[in-house]
Amino acid sequence: MKYEAKDIDEDVPIGSPILKVEASDFVSRAEIKYSVSDDHFAVDSNGVISNAKPLDADNNKAFYEFNVTATVTTTVRVPIKNKNDEPPIFTQNIYTAKVGRNASSDTLVTTVEALDKDGDNIRYTFIGGAREIDQFVIEEWTGVIRLENSAINFDR
Image (cartoon, rainbow, N blue to C red; front, side, top):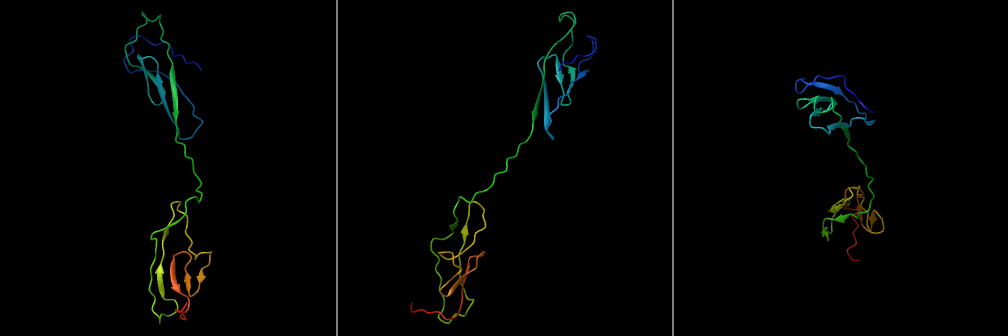
């Protein structure tokens, strides 16, 4: 598309609006930035062209011709779906707990904790996926290990 201003007097004051160009971005909220190829002119963020220097009809065959470039800048967001590709890691290598011989059911034994770099919810079970093993039960979402019953067999 070509634009042409109406006849402009060569003695127009510097900074006078001469013509407005328009660019479409077809993208909402995109920022359009204009630039001109001739330093006699300037263009603002609205596409309004004005003279940046005095104009001279005698030395330019009575016209100036230059390019206006419009660049569009917009923000692009790419959501990434998390894959569970990082194994949870326990905060301790070994958990040691002591339980008295006369401890009752539901007595707290210890709490285990693991961290997952993926940010996935960690579910706690004993090896093999069981929530109960021997006299112990583990709370699936907290890692709390308690006695399941008070009939502890210490002779195993």
